[in-house]
Image 1 (cartoon, rainbow, N blue to C red):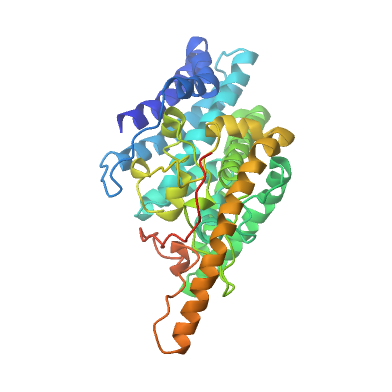
Image 2: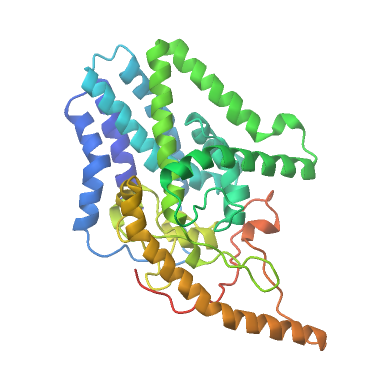
Length: 398
């Protein structure tokens, strides 16, 4: 836990000091988020060892709560530093806004993501508020009720198909994810018989509008524009995270027409130590989707059985900004994992036929599991149950 705390809290402190006095702390914070983490990933060989899957981490939740508080403190301080009477020069103001957006996209986003998966209304509300402060509150609903249920399929807007560029993806998902989350939340509210005033989208829209108005009233037009720019760039990184971690990986359709359960083969992963700590182990993405209730320090990584990105997540995000280069690097890897799935399809079909035959003769057939652990009851707190891993054929190292 010491590594997680050090790597995540340090940039908040440097950026806050930079907002107050500019100079070296500000440039250190910017260098930390753009160059130092990538360099440290190259210097620290290997990967962090897997913790025991069922290990408990008492400090994990307090760190999330502390990072949530730090997010709101830094947001206010940065808006003052960029648009207020901070005494910073123009270059320092631009650097401060850019640094804050990087911190919000790469640390506040994973923090909010972990919080919305936490038990307890308070923690989940804090996660929703963080996303709302970045003017993307709907991501909390779309992530839980749409992404985790339909990941790796056409029904999940945030799972990019092979051949779709990030730019086309971002334009599509900005609208589709908002609407998909709205439909899912509305359906959940109707099933539960809850009043309209408790609909989370009211919080997302009204809260975002209130924060935009507050920024304008407190710092004028410059404050309003600074807030929109910082939140917008943080949103780009949130979109980039989903794009990179699910690009091209698709769940197969079983002989009975249902989708295979979510498995390790449906997310891209990265083993680098420092950037993984910075993003609270978000690059260990396969295990999070298979066991969404597992605490972030205990997420597992298996180089042999999980799709691996060729470089760290921040580096691959930068690569995705150049679609021809991204396709050249990633499309062959997507094809290899698709071939592994195809190799497993024939045995799976035979097993399904045998099961149907057994059912006709009176023997017990193996039931098909839900598409996702969340599909059992999307309105309930996330459980730690793990669906059985489907056969995937010979996994390939990346």
